[in-house]
Amino acid sequence: MSVSNYRGVSDYQVLQRDGDDKTRVSLESGEVIELPVGGPYEVGGAKNVLVGDLWVLGGQSNMEGSADLVDVETPHPLVHSFQSREEWSPAEEPLHWLGESPREVHHAIWGMTKPETIPPRDPNRSKGAGLGLTFAKEMVGANGVPIGLVPASHGGTSMQQWDPALRDRGGESLYGATLERFRAVGGKVAGILWYQGESDANPVDGAKYTQRMTTLIQSFRADFNAPSLPFYLVQLGGFVAEPSQDMIVGWNLVRESQRTLPETLPNVGVVSAIDLGLDDLIHIDTRSLKVLGRRLAAAALGKPAPALKAAAFEPENGWLRVSFDHVQGGLQAAGRPTGFSLRDADGRDLPLIYKVALSGSDALLKITEPASLRSANLWYGWGLEPYVNLTDSTGAAVPAFGPVRI
Image (cartoon, rainbow, N blue to C red; front, side):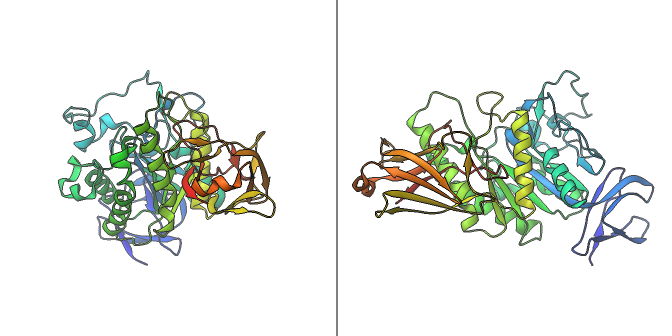
């Protein structure tokens, strides 16, 4: 078992466990102590210290938390947070208070300079609910292991702003600031949760999203010295706006890039937000963020969301069979299964589907003109704000996909 070195254990800190469910801590006094998973402990004068799993929360506003602070997730005694001010505390909404950060980038993005002292918190803040606390409580409920959250998101940020090549700028870059926070919590974490992509949902950046995300994940793993570090991301949800062709192309490009990342990178999982409600034009609402937190926890606990397996026409019965992996208890829908479409290469709708039936892990699409499939692409969740309603029996949503050749 390795020895973790801390700059001084503090009240409410969560120490990352090792693989044998213990951690050895070298204190400033030179003493080395061994702690099993659990707590709370008193360590070197620090109280309410826990041993468990640390999760980094990265991305932009839907991970930072932009939902109404109404009916928010309640705290849990085994869930703590490394606050934006870089002090440990019991986790409570909102998790991010970026104006308190000692890292320059979180102020520079707003066109401001880092304050010399931590500013007072706004007692009238009305937005800021996120998914992290629900995720953590689900994890604790499943295995009893305490969770430490490391919020590191910033709303409105692009993949270029998260570029790992900027790591040497330290706290003046998003990646560098996250790396510094990682070191501050002990240099070991259990994994990363990621929700980002809205700022890249255009034809130019969308086309580069797969490569940029691949570079980001590989860089985090290298810099965290964890080659198999789990990385779970959220596929973009809806966006209510007057659609332009560029917006539709960009949004679909990013969604498809996110969906297919696990096909080329190990220990990467994707969950969908495509069926969830909004609090405004682009931000997931408070109730739905709780759903999303549960979906991420399920993925982290080894229960991956449904994933497209194959789509093939069966001429003997006239069905277009769409098959999925990782479906728990069969596909289901509230009312008529909705969200599939067939489109030509330019994205124009081909009105060929007149019936959708669900059978176990398959969706069966009845087609009016099978010959037209030769020029068609299959989509699920095409566009900015599609109505889709397929889940499995656990509530895990089928991700948006397309274009898929038949």
